[in-house]
Image (cartoon, rainbow, N blue to C red; front, side, top):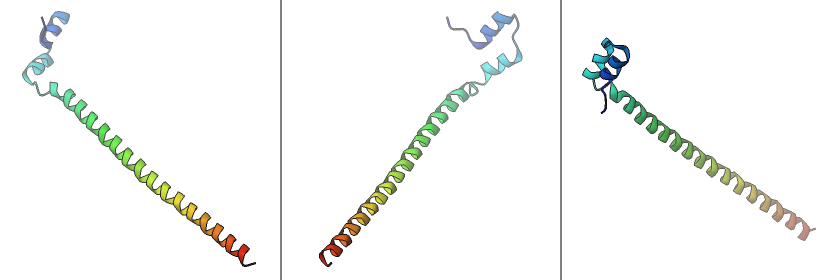
Length: 87
């Protein structure tokens, strides 16, 4: 048998504290933990999504810089070949 919070408290202490009445009369308090956990899950998801977008953006910029370096190397090779042929 599942005991309510009030039954559990009264059997342990022998008296019913005033907060036990609150527990039974205001069930929305119980949902706070569930809501808190749901919000934490959603915030973690948003955080991971933002981190992923940042990584993608960073990788795209890094790739662009690498292409610029390759192009500069090719230009330098072409200039060196031009000097060799016209020397």
